[in-house]
Image (tube, rainbow, N blue to C red; front, side, top):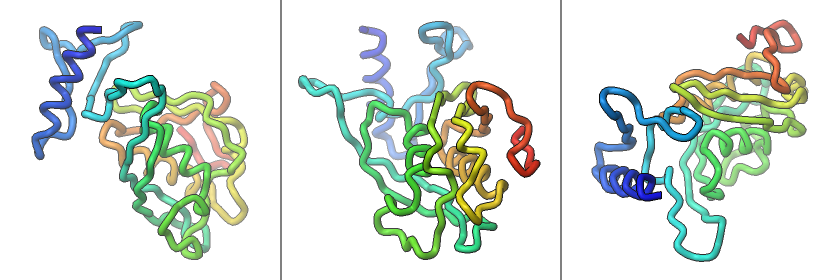
Length: 190
């Protein structure tokens, strides 16, 4: 507990400097490791829960760039959003939840100029980030995009939206825990 509190104090203090967005700790030239031997990685002030009361949920705001389909469904359009969310979930999960929810949930966006890209029945089985790679395990419904959306647009909407996050450089997509080499029409997922 004291190590986490010390780490939170250092990260929150340094992230107040305008030029500092993230902090990563190294011990003897090795990245700081957490439980189960996992690398802690980059942290920002919002990586730590500020909850001194009895409430287990806390809410904060995030500015995200999400990629939705053009009206024809054959290209991507970036949609900047600001969303309030439960701060106990990872931003990667928030991005996916927003894409799955579709365009109707995006306040302030002209929904006549964008289309949903992910099947709304898609479930997030698991999501994690290690060494800049977002490992994403989705249900099989992801393989069936909404009508009029190409496979390439569906896949790259997820990839582009996730790599907008500063801790994600690549995305590895699995379906129900298994590697799937191709989307339904032959578009390569690997």
